[in-house]
Length: 459
Image 1 (cartoon, rainbow, N blue to C red):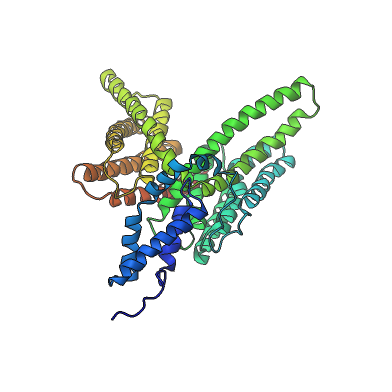
Image 2: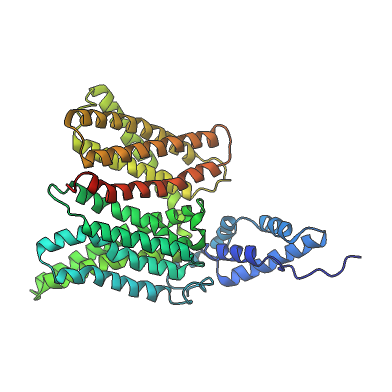
């Protein structure tokens, strides 16, 4: 006779907690729904353990029988369509995971830190003349905003790594010291390269605060990629709407001849622009599941458009025979376009499950990446011609290095897409390849921002 079994959930605290957290983040599912689903799940686990399965085996089988989180959420959403519209703000926040901010303090913390970031950005300007501000802000803008974001992310993180946070503090302190000691001189090429690349490097490093103890795992950095991708979308939307509202309000101020209009908006714009970074962080954490809905739509729209644009460029260049004589502005424009392509691929893979079946979008992505590789090869050829003709400069070498990294990233993405689509291999290696993108681009950005100035005499 088999004795009485222990409770079904015994020994399953960690996987059960992860499953609950994953389910509560799905749109259209409430805490009460998760409690009900957990009862069904544990009942199934109990039945499976009665036939001799281990707790882990029983749990995995029970979860599979219950259905994927997306399918379960879709069924609940079909029944309770009103929840999807009210879930962002109108419903109370779910309890925060252990080790994070107390429940209900996420939004006040984001707003408070956002206000501090805005004030830290604007107050120094009050004590500077125009020339001093032009020198100060390109060097220090990232250090005025990102520390407040890091504090928020670290406060919300389920775990914290003392070594990781120490590394993060060291990177920020060393970068701030170097950038402010550099004696940049005319024509300021390296100053503007630092201004452009340093925030990228620091934003990449800030993922340590978000990931906590997981920051040493390469695959975990895909979560930071998802965070950044969604945050950028929210920020662009907030800026566009905020700009429209600000213009309307400014017209009202001007119409009534209100005094000190320029002074008011001189404070409102920078404070709101910096504070919106923290608001976006709160939105991303509050609506993590939006990624599942937004990413396929955006990539399905942009992928064919980008493919047609790059194909048109190839046709025009190859038929016109003007490859080496491509103007600097054209090269810069298509460098930016290739960066967008790499971002679209990265964003698409971050929303794609490695075990998912092949989709038409995967083939579209493969075509886009192959066309982008061809364009990148032509751009590298054109850049080599310009280097031989006009000599080297910080801008040319920074662009050349970026294109080499883009070529490697896009070529590797094409290779892994072929493995998935043609050879029917699992998509895990495709995901891992994308995980390398953020640290590699971050390291290159740091090299350009901190190593190029002394190498080129701070010109």
